[in-house]
Amino acid sequence: MNNWRKFRRLPAEERAVFLAASTLLPAVRVGLRTLGLRRVQVVLSGRMRPGWLAEPDVAVYRARRLARLVRVAAQYVGGTCLARSVVLACLLERQGVPAQLRIGVRKGENGFEAHAWVEAAGMSLDEGQDVGERCAAFDRDFALARVGWR
Image 1 (cartoon, rainbow, N blue to C red):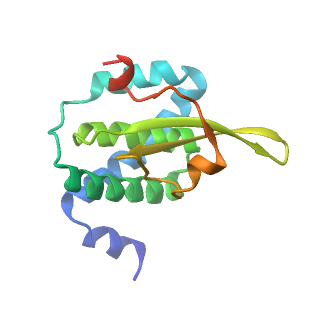
Image 2: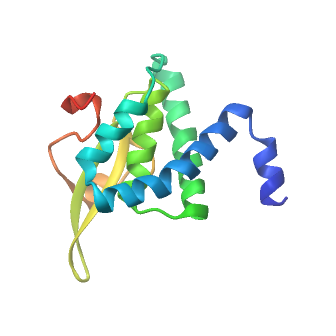
Image 3: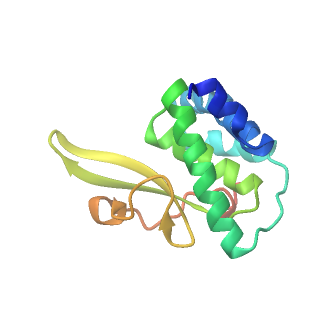
């Protein structure tokens, strides 16, 4: 099945999320380079409308679906792990799903490498569950609502 047919078979809400992620990813990538993380989050928080608070089981299901849609959108338009994570955290916040933007470091072949991912209900959404073992996360939660950037 070709990509267009797969896209058309998605529910309308998921198509909208995919298109939003495809639009936000390049903008966030440029914004991170020119403005920095804090300012990008301030800009995104000003554009967000309040979401409804999802039930815990629904929230985890919705969070995993959104993470998958953002990951697929990033395959088409590109994006670093930080850009993907910022977009995913923003979209989750709009859906009323509490999530944490996590940033950490790991030792790679060329020295230390930074990495970003999103967690909801204590689970990594856009990485394997062992991301906490592979990366030493900073203690700070970088999500918008958690640090008062709203």
